Length: 101
Image (tube, rainbow, N blue to C red; front, side):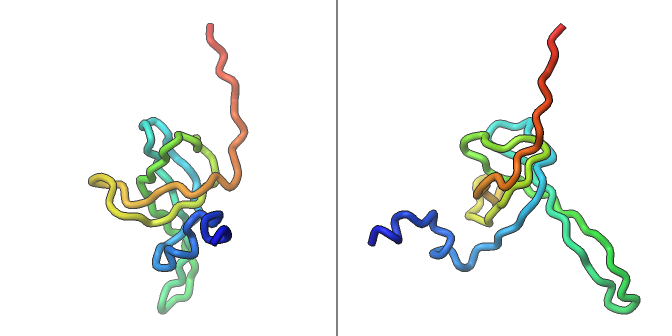
């Protein structure tokens, strides 16, 4: 029983989609815009091209910032555009200290 409680629920949610992407906007409170890139091969010419999809992601603790590599998981609709939630921050982007004059 203790092993099931320690798990964050990823095994129980076997029908959920999980993607890795980059945070492109953190200007909203508890919401991030994440870009997910994928490679697609043309069915006839077989040229490989890069496609981008942008998702609105729920970030309850405002843990991620612009430039971070994050893992997201599909969830129930939280608002008109949010159908994804932040699972974890894989790699944080280097922060630049703001200079106030």
